[in-house]
Length: 163
Image (spheres, rainbow, N blue to C red):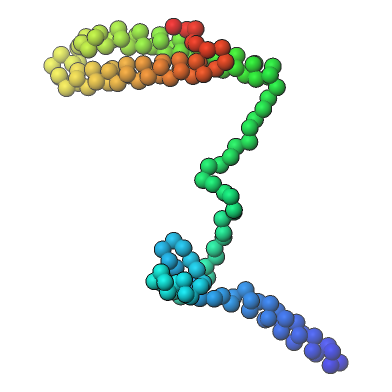
């Protein structure tokens, strides 16, 4: 009978002892963005004692750097050639589309003097806004063409064919 009465008390005692280690924490000092529980170090750096809440600090892995290493993806040569051909086809189609668009924008821009629309004849700011928007589209399209040519040049096989 005595054993049956002692068992619950022992169980509560074990739970209390196990739980007390979780909540017991040394004094933690904050030194800028660094935390420490070493009193002498905290006094040297004039750190402040943290009085509220618990602090959990996860140490960084040794040898970790700010750059994330990506595993090299290797494919067999025929599969890579197929991918390169598909990439080149897509990029050349985009280049051709951008070059066609550039021709149309240049025609509309007319060397910096686009034709005035009927709604712009009396309203000069509207004309200036449209002229600035055309110039921005022209510059953007030229930059797109340069980028596409550069990307095609990076592919195996070299220079862009759509000119």
